[in-house]
Image (cartoon, rainbow, N blue to C red; front, side, top):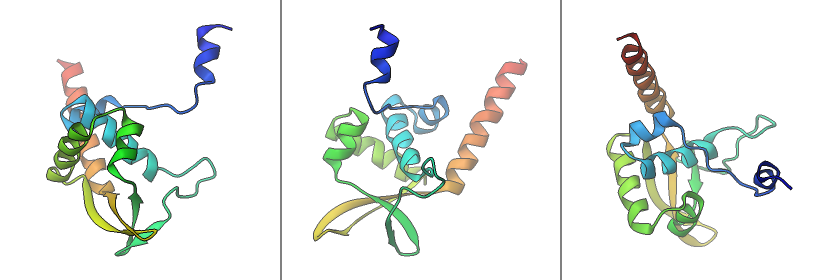
Length: 130
């Protein structure tokens, strides 16, 4: 079996977009942002993956350990990246009850993400035209 065939059978992928790394000002933040965007993106059937609706918006309810495992980052890296994404207005974070326990809930500010991605694309176009 070739390496490419083995890769197909490894299961999940972590796709990190260059624009997300630039927006988050680092690879770790870009990885976390990519995963947050993944969970907010509709599934193959066009349905939302998000099931937790509170305060008129949908949230991802996951503990820090799960985020760290998904993004292959340490708890300290997660904390720094989460705070960075919050400080630039990309995510809202709340600790709310979920299945009887306090769990971290994260919601994506899609309008702010679209604006920042547009800025990145514009900057890339300008750099290429020089």
